[in-house]
Image (tube, rainbow, N blue to C red):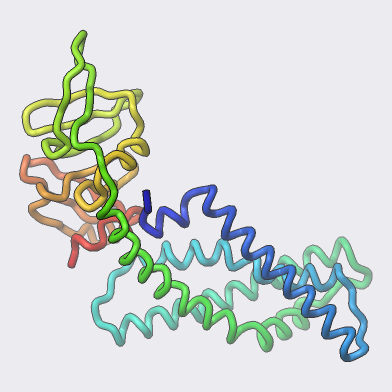
Length: 267
Protein backbone atom coordinates (compact mmCIF):
# COMPACT_ATOMS: atom_id res chain seq x y z
CA UNK A 1 0.00 0.00 0.00
CA UNK A 2 1.26 3.49 -0.81
CA UNK A 3 1.91 5.66 2.24
CA UNK A 4 2.07 9.47 2.66
CA UNK A 5 5.44 10.90 1.69
CA UNK A 6 6.16 12.01 5.26
CA UNK A 7 5.91 8.38 6.29
CA UNK A 8 8.21 7.45 3.43
CA UNK A 9 10.79 9.75 4.98
CA UNK A 10 10.32 8.26 8.42
CA UNK A 11 10.49 4.55 7.58
CA UNK A 12 13.94 3.05 8.23
CA UNK A 13 13.96 0.94 5.05
CA UNK A 14 13.12 3.94 2.87
CA UNK A 15 15.68 6.04 4.73
CA UNK A 16 18.34 3.54 3.72
CA UNK A 17 17.45 4.14 0.08
CA UNK A 18 17.88 7.90 0.53
CA UNK A 19 21.18 7.43 2.33
CA UNK A 20 22.33 5.09 -0.43
CA UNK A 21 21.43 7.75 -2.99
CA UNK A 22 23.57 10.32 -1.21
CA UNK A 23 26.47 7.87 -1.02
CA UNK A 24 26.13 7.50 -4.79
CA UNK A 25 26.25 11.29 -5.17
CA UNK A 26 29.40 11.41 -3.04
CA UNK A 27 30.98 8.67 -5.14
CA UNK A 28 30.19 10.51 -8.36
CA UNK A 29 31.59 13.73 -6.89
CA UNK A 30 34.86 11.97 -6.04
CA UNK A 31 34.99 10.60 -9.58
CA UNK A 32 34.46 14.12 -10.90
CA UNK A 33 37.38 15.36 -8.77
CA UNK A 34 39.58 12.59 -10.14
CA UNK A 35 38.68 13.35 -13.76
CA UNK A 36 39.28 17.06 -13.14
CA UNK A 37 42.74 16.32 -11.74
CA UNK A 38 43.60 14.16 -14.75
CA UNK A 39 42.43 16.73 -17.27
CA UNK A 40 44.11 19.71 -15.61
CA UNK A 41 47.17 17.90 -14.29
CA UNK A 42 46.50 18.72 -10.64
CA UNK A 43 47.04 16.50 -7.63
CA UNK A 44 44.32 14.12 -6.49
CA UNK A 45 44.06 12.77 -2.95
CA UNK A 46 41.10 10.47 -2.41
CA UNK A 47 41.05 11.10 1.35
CA UNK A 48 40.71 14.85 0.81
CA UNK A 49 38.09 14.34 -1.89
CA UNK A 50 36.02 11.94 0.22
CA UNK A 51 36.15 14.22 3.22
CA UNK A 52 35.18 17.32 1.28
CA UNK A 53 32.39 15.62 -0.66
CA UNK A 54 30.88 14.36 2.59
CA UNK A 55 29.18 17.76 2.50
CA UNK A 56 26.43 16.10 0.45
CA UNK A 57 25.78 13.48 3.10
CA UNK A 58 24.61 16.27 5.41
CA UNK A 59 21.64 16.72 3.07
CA UNK A 60 20.06 13.68 4.76
CA UNK A 61 19.55 15.09 8.28
CA UNK A 62 18.96 18.63 7.04
CA UNK A 63 16.22 17.45 4.67
CA UNK A 64 14.47 15.76 7.60
CA UNK A 65 14.88 18.97 9.59
CA UNK A 66 13.50 21.17 6.81
CA UNK A 67 10.39 19.04 6.28
CA UNK A 68 9.78 19.00 10.04
CA UNK A 69 10.12 22.80 10.26
CA UNK A 70 7.79 23.40 7.33
CA UNK A 71 5.09 21.14 8.79
CA UNK A 72 4.99 23.29 11.92
CA UNK A 73 3.69 26.36 10.09
CA UNK A 74 1.00 26.70 7.45
CA UNK A 75 0.97 29.71 5.12
CA UNK A 76 -1.85 30.18 2.59
CA UNK A 77 -0.38 33.28 0.92
CA UNK A 78 1.82 32.07 -1.94
CA UNK A 79 4.13 35.09 -1.85
CA UNK A 80 4.80 34.73 1.88
CA UNK A 81 5.18 30.97 1.40
CA UNK A 82 7.91 31.46 -1.21
CA UNK A 83 9.69 34.07 0.93
CA UNK A 84 9.42 31.87 4.01
CA UNK A 85 10.86 28.85 2.22
CA UNK A 86 13.59 30.98 0.67
CA UNK A 87 14.55 32.21 4.14
CA UNK A 88 14.53 28.67 5.53
CA UNK A 89 16.63 27.49 2.56
CA UNK A 90 19.21 30.23 3.14
CA UNK A 91 19.46 29.58 6.87
CA UNK A 92 19.73 25.81 6.40
CA UNK A 93 22.38 26.24 3.70
CA UNK A 94 24.53 28.41 5.98
CA UNK A 95 24.01 26.02 8.90
CA UNK A 96 24.80 23.09 6.61
CA UNK A 97 28.10 24.64 5.53
CA UNK A 98 28.98 25.66 9.08
CA UNK A 99 28.42 22.19 10.53
CA UNK A 100 30.14 20.53 7.57
CA UNK A 101 33.18 22.79 7.98
CA UNK A 102 33.34 21.99 11.69
CA UNK A 103 33.18 18.28 10.86
CA UNK A 104 35.82 18.61 8.13
CA UNK A 105 38.28 20.53 10.33
CA UNK A 106 37.74 18.18 13.29
CA UNK A 107 38.50 15.10 11.18
CA UNK A 108 41.47 16.73 9.45
CA UNK A 109 42.94 17.63 12.85
CA UNK A 110 43.33 13.93 13.64
CA UNK A 111 44.04 12.64 10.11
CA UNK A 112 46.11 15.26 8.27
CA UNK A 113 49.28 17.09 9.13
CA UNK A 114 49.07 19.99 8.87
CA UNK A 115 45.32 20.12 9.39
CA UNK A 116 43.02 22.27 7.27
CA UNK A 117 42.04 25.75 8.44
CA UNK A 118 38.40 26.47 9.28
CA UNK A 119 38.25 29.79 7.42
CA UNK A 120 39.65 28.33 4.20
CA UNK A 121 37.25 25.37 4.10
CA UNK A 122 34.25 27.51 5.08
CA UNK A 123 35.01 30.12 2.42
CA UNK A 124 35.58 27.47 -0.22
CA UNK A 125 32.31 25.66 0.58
CA UNK A 126 30.42 28.95 0.76
CA UNK A 127 31.65 30.12 -2.64
CA UNK A 128 31.27 26.76 -4.41
CA UNK A 129 28.29 25.00 -2.80
CA UNK A 130 26.05 27.69 -1.26
CA UNK A 131 23.96 28.35 -4.38
CA UNK A 132 23.48 24.62 -5.03
CA UNK A 133 22.38 24.05 -1.43
CA UNK A 134 19.89 26.93 -1.50
CA UNK A 135 18.42 25.61 -4.74
CA UNK A 136 18.11 22.11 -3.27
CA UNK A 137 16.51 23.22 0.00
CA UNK A 138 14.13 25.54 -1.86
CA UNK A 139 12.95 22.91 -4.36
CA UNK A 140 12.89 19.85 -2.06
CA UNK A 141 9.75 20.84 -0.07
CA UNK A 142 7.77 21.55 -3.24
CA UNK A 143 8.67 18.10 -4.57
CA UNK A 144 7.88 16.38 -1.26
CA UNK A 145 4.51 18.08 -0.75
CA UNK A 146 3.58 17.63 -4.42
CA UNK A 147 4.19 13.90 -4.15
CA UNK A 148 2.31 13.85 -0.87
CA UNK A 149 -0.81 15.15 -2.62
CA UNK A 150 -0.43 12.73 -5.51
CA UNK A 151 0.38 9.47 -3.72
CA UNK A 152 -2.90 9.07 -1.78
CA UNK A 153 -4.75 8.93 -5.11
CA UNK A 154 -3.06 5.62 -5.85
CA UNK A 155 -4.82 4.05 -2.86
CA UNK A 156 -8.28 4.39 -4.41
CA UNK A 157 -8.01 1.04 -6.20
CA UNK A 158 -6.78 -0.87 -3.16
CA UNK A 159 -9.11 -3.13 -1.21
CA UNK A 160 -9.26 -2.49 2.52
CA UNK A 161 -10.84 -4.54 5.26
CA UNK A 162 -14.55 -3.86 5.60
CA UNK A 163 -14.96 -6.04 8.68
CA UNK A 164 -12.71 -6.94 11.58
CA UNK A 165 -12.77 -10.02 13.76
CA UNK A 166 -12.37 -9.07 17.40
CA UNK A 167 -12.27 -11.36 20.42
CA UNK A 168 -14.50 -10.36 23.30
CA UNK A 169 -14.47 -12.82 26.16
CA UNK A 170 -15.00 -16.28 24.71
CA UNK A 171 -16.59 -14.91 21.55
CA UNK A 172 -15.15 -13.66 18.28
CA UNK A 173 -17.34 -11.04 16.63
CA UNK A 174 -17.16 -9.05 13.41
CA UNK A 175 -17.38 -5.27 13.45
CA UNK A 176 -17.76 -3.01 10.43
CA UNK A 177 -14.87 -0.68 9.70
CA UNK A 178 -17.37 2.12 9.05
CA UNK A 179 -18.63 1.83 12.63
CA UNK A 180 -15.14 2.52 14.01
CA UNK A 181 -14.76 6.01 15.44
CA UNK A 182 -11.27 5.89 16.93
CA UNK A 183 -8.46 3.43 17.52
CA UNK A 184 -6.11 4.20 20.39
CA UNK A 185 -3.44 2.53 22.47
CA UNK A 186 -3.93 1.33 26.02
CA UNK A 187 -0.84 -0.80 26.51
CA UNK A 188 -0.52 -3.68 26.03
CA UNK A 189 -3.73 -3.44 23.97
CA UNK A 190 -5.22 -1.38 21.18
CA UNK A 191 -8.69 -0.02 21.89
CA UNK A 192 -11.22 0.03 19.05
CA UNK A 193 -14.05 2.45 19.80
CA UNK A 194 -17.29 2.20 17.83
CA UNK A 195 -20.55 4.08 18.21
CA UNK A 196 -21.86 1.39 20.54
CA UNK A 197 -18.92 -0.33 22.22
CA UNK A 198 -15.21 -0.55 22.94
CA UNK A 199 -13.06 -3.56 22.04
CA UNK A 200 -9.55 -4.53 23.06
CA UNK A 201 -7.26 -5.96 20.42
CA UNK A 202 -3.65 -7.16 20.35
CA UNK A 203 -2.81 -5.80 16.88
CA UNK A 204 -0.59 -2.73 16.70
CA UNK A 205 -1.38 0.73 15.35
CA UNK A 206 0.86 0.07 12.35
CA UNK A 207 -1.17 -3.02 11.47
CA UNK A 208 -4.43 -1.05 11.56
CA UNK A 209 -2.86 1.63 9.36
CA UNK A 210 -2.37 -0.99 6.66
CA UNK A 211 -5.87 -2.45 7.07
CA UNK A 212 -7.89 0.78 7.10
CA UNK A 213 -8.56 3.09 4.17
CA UNK A 214 -6.32 6.17 4.67
CA UNK A 215 -8.85 8.38 2.91
CA UNK A 216 -11.14 7.84 5.92
CA UNK A 217 -8.90 6.76 8.80
CA UNK A 218 -5.94 8.95 9.71
CA UNK A 219 -3.24 8.47 12.30
CA UNK A 220 -3.15 11.90 13.92
CA UNK A 221 -0.72 11.26 16.76
CA UNK A 222 1.44 8.46 18.08
CA UNK A 223 -1.42 6.69 19.82
CA UNK A 224 -4.61 7.56 17.90
CA UNK A 225 -6.29 6.86 14.57
CA UNK A 226 -9.55 8.71 13.88
CA UNK A 227 -12.44 8.35 11.47
CA UNK A 228 -12.51 11.66 9.58
CA UNK A 229 -16.25 11.34 8.98
CA UNK A 230 -16.94 12.18 12.63
CA UNK A 231 -14.67 15.25 12.82
CA UNK A 232 -16.85 18.28 13.57
CA UNK A 233 -14.33 21.03 14.27
CA UNK A 234 -10.59 21.75 14.44
CA UNK A 235 -9.18 24.16 17.01
CA UNK A 236 -5.58 25.37 16.86
CA UNK A 237 -3.36 25.09 19.94
CA UNK A 238 -1.11 27.87 18.54
CA UNK A 239 1.93 25.57 18.54
CA UNK A 240 1.31 23.58 15.37
CA UNK A 241 -0.99 21.08 17.10
CA UNK A 242 -4.79 21.07 16.73
CA UNK A 243 -7.67 19.65 18.73
CA UNK A 244 -10.24 17.68 16.75
CA UNK A 245 -13.74 17.79 18.20
CA UNK A 246 -15.55 14.57 17.26
CA UNK A 247 -19.29 14.01 16.93
CA UNK A 248 -19.16 11.55 19.86
CA UNK A 249 -18.02 14.37 22.15
CA UNK A 250 -14.41 13.23 22.30
CA UNK A 251 -11.48 15.61 21.75
CA UNK A 252 -8.36 14.23 20.05
CA UNK A 253 -5.04 16.02 19.66
CA UNK A 254 -3.72 16.28 16.11
CA UNK A 255 0.05 16.25 16.53
CA UNK A 256 2.19 18.52 14.36
CA UNK A 257 4.57 15.57 13.96
CA UNK A 258 1.81 13.79 11.98
CA UNK A 259 0.61 16.93 10.22
CA UNK A 260 1.32 15.52 6.77
CA UNK A 261 -1.41 12.93 7.47
CA UNK A 262 -4.14 15.41 8.45
CA UNK A 263 -3.05 18.63 6.73
CA UNK A 264 -5.86 18.35 4.15
CA UNK A 265 -8.48 18.56 6.92
CA UNK A 266 -7.61 22.26 7.28
CA UNK A 267 -8.48 23.00 3.66
